[in-house]
Length: 132
Image (cartoon, rainbow, N blue to C red):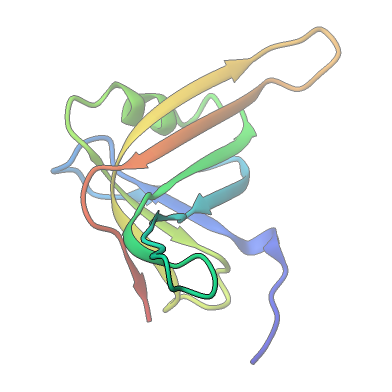
């Protein structure tokens, strides 16, 4: 299986639940966190602690630079409905991605000694899936 450099990662988002997802510009990184709930069910005679597994908790983050030609992240954060998201690890593997709808938050940071940066976070609004 080939390895990929992160420079070709992609994020597609819509500005509403009914909107078409388009590529978010000027991002430099994204992360997807998928921890699963686990509940301890250890009994007296068990040789060690035992757990049962529950549901995944899908969330993540985005970061990049301000680009005045695209306000997509902030429009998505303003949406009254969950937005569509597609996260691609690499454009070189276009059939591999994570997707679902999410609630989005956005931030912008401006400093006298730095480039204007944007960050965002998201939490799943519906069940997420992975292709392939």
